[in-house]
Image (cartoon, rainbow, N blue to C red; front, side):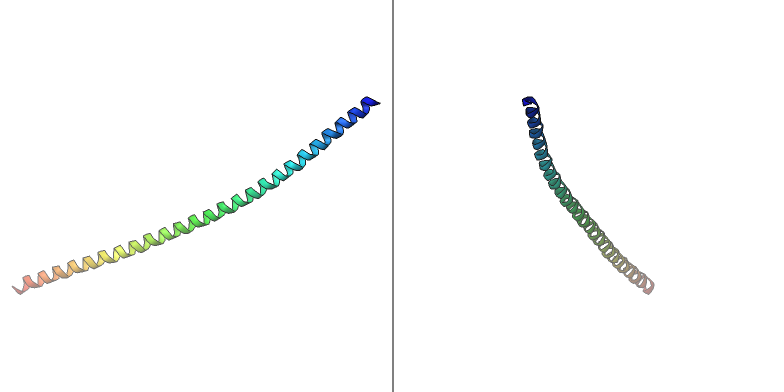
Length: 93
């Protein structure tokens, strides 16, 4: 009978220890799930920021390209006017 009680007590202690470990591990799982959710939110926010930055860069490139094209057209017009003036001078002679 004594050995049965000892075995029973050992099993009861091991069960209590296993239950405590289970509770601790469940807490760790909850913490990891919360951390995972937070990291997913951060990743999503970074993706949105990167997308906005790409859009801003594309907008700046387009704006710069349009300004450059406008300046080049102005320079071409100035050169054409000079050529017209030169032709006018040559025809007047």
